Picture (cartoon, one colour):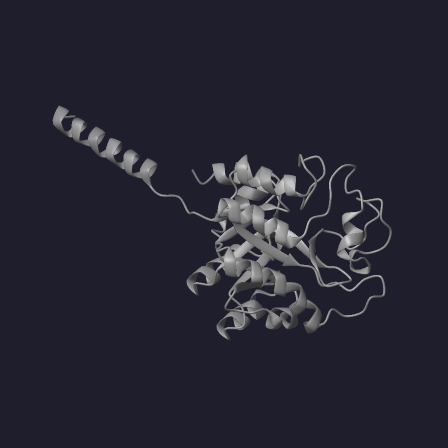
Length: 269
């Protein structure tokens, strides 16, 4: 083979390799699940605690955090995953049966405390990071349905905070379309959590929601491609292991809620 042809082939291969290496990877926003993670054995600080949120921001460099929001008896918004208090606190019954003052007296995970959404907003505002609010609306302990008045009262303090503390767009996520209809679309981004991708598309195209939130095992490649073709933002959650994270990232979502923020961000570098 002529040496000039050989040199040309080598140059082409080098240039092609450089282009491939320099290609920009898909970028998704990475939210820490309940702060630094929610799976026992994986997190350092308990889910939804001030310490866990700060750890996600300051150490893991999360783009934002997903937090679980519940309404107290006196319509304050607090961060707690389960409705029942027995597993993680010295309280008995459900979050919704307690006032904010009573919840603050409980001992959470031995030496932590349940915090308010406003406290989480302060942590985010100080760092200019995003919040993804998973609004828990399951009526348990015989409390009955959560009403529009109850939800609106709970968000009053949040809206007052935002008037004086600008933040990146805040997402409010719910499985209930009724609840999302009560949320101020000018202040918050509304995300519908659903297994039914077709219904989600219909709601987005009807301008009732701003994005979809789906578990990894609820969505396949074909559905993800359709959402991207329709330019519908979607967030994937339910990812803990490296295999799950790679699979979720392969669907090219807009956002990911992860129990392993460090690895999730690493695969995008």
